[in-house]
Image (cartoon, rainbow, N blue to C red; front, side, top):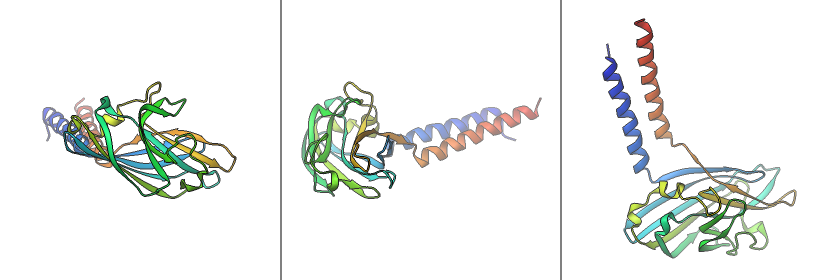
Length: 217
């Protein structure tokens, strides 16, 4: 029979292990559920050393087919302004151009962002939306970075860096809906399967502990 103290130790180990998995896992799953425009994707950050790093963003337009529309831009923030330059990009959709300006990407009412990509290099405009990411399609965006102390950053650094004048870490722009409208959709983080599994194990341990306590009454 497992003692109460032993069960508490096991649960603690699961929680600690879950935290270590979270810190070492370099990709986060993101999604956005907007008024008309929805997306799913991933955000990956990896540093080569203190002065060089790479960001990879994958986005799929998951808007309702009936809504139509195109994903035409996206942006995120620069944690503590440690990113000082972008030496190159690789975008699977070459109609997207780099956006790189501190607090210069206007995504009102969600604030101002620092780095991103958009059709024609214009987050709000960019011409016809038809060259964007259509419903059901996916695009990949890679940014090669230079800066200082980049090896101190991880994916959480970007999630916790909010837009200036807003409280969002990621934003996507949609245009060309069938109703003639456009909208901006902020991003949220999807829980990681590994963390959820560990959390489930921890909860099972708590349930077992409670059951043992109840049976002794």
